[in-house]
Image (cartoon, rainbow, N blue to C red):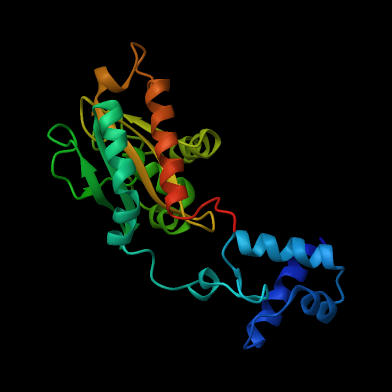
Length: 252
């Protein structure tokens, strides 16, 4: 049987220590209480701080349990908050590409559109996207455990003749999404429509939404029906900027 991971044990011990103290705990006290060298304790605290599980009190320099840890298991980020953080970047994607740009999240068993720009075409007025047949849905299936659980053992509906309905084929497609960092569909949800989407992460690195664009196949794909690399790069860049707006990658 594999052994335990020492750094994880130490990080858990730090969190337990901070959770029992009513006031911020100085670095030296953390190190002494847990029998750690100061540089080791500092490295662990900084890592926990980067993911939002620990906060540093500015006046004292001491450490305390972070807000993100306290919110674990709580209600997912409100769609209005998500929309507010992503609004400018989704607008930017639409302006740069001239295509309908959408932000969507996994809520109550559906891929719900939180914000859409320039949608007179294929995007229409839809508020829900097909989970296994849309680029946004594939991103969420690839990275969100709840979305992934929802399709296990379920028959996948064919929206067009191109829709992936075989579970094994879908899993291969999702593995590609995780490898490349973005998803694309070509006429899987609607005839003549293609889309590209990428994951949006929160401060802790968890995928909370997908952002992307969709439009006619002739504009989204090249002559071999492959998603255009320049559009994929735009989508990934906007997804990263939106993630930063939610605190992902922030250093304190």
